[in-house]
Length: 130
Image (cartoon, rainbow, N blue to C red; front, side, top):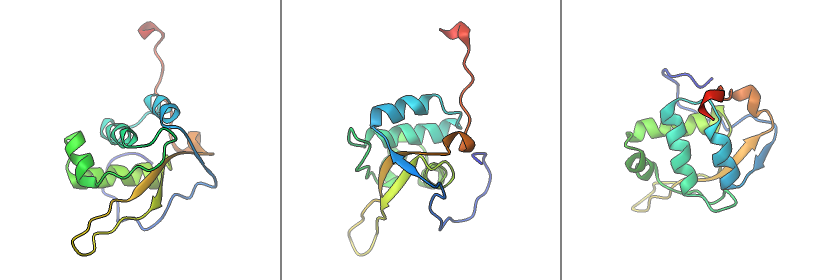
């Protein structure tokens, strides 16, 4: 469920049976057709700009994403949780930490779950826009 509203803190990881890594270009093209709230889509697009060509090694801090999007850190955290836990289109490959003076960001990989179309719908196409 991608709709807004209050959600409890998440401890779970995506429950998709199978996540397939995907290249940044392919993921971005697919993302354009996903029916998502604008802020969630913005966070997803900004996140993709930090990836390698193969969609790996995404490691901006939540504060960096907030600066890039103009959203607050809490909003960024919420949208990352939707992308990671609800839609399963990003996979956290390493959890960051903020121990001591060092602050390490989570590391993500762009992915596509095998049940993607059960998780979200596509933007309706309008032939007049072509």
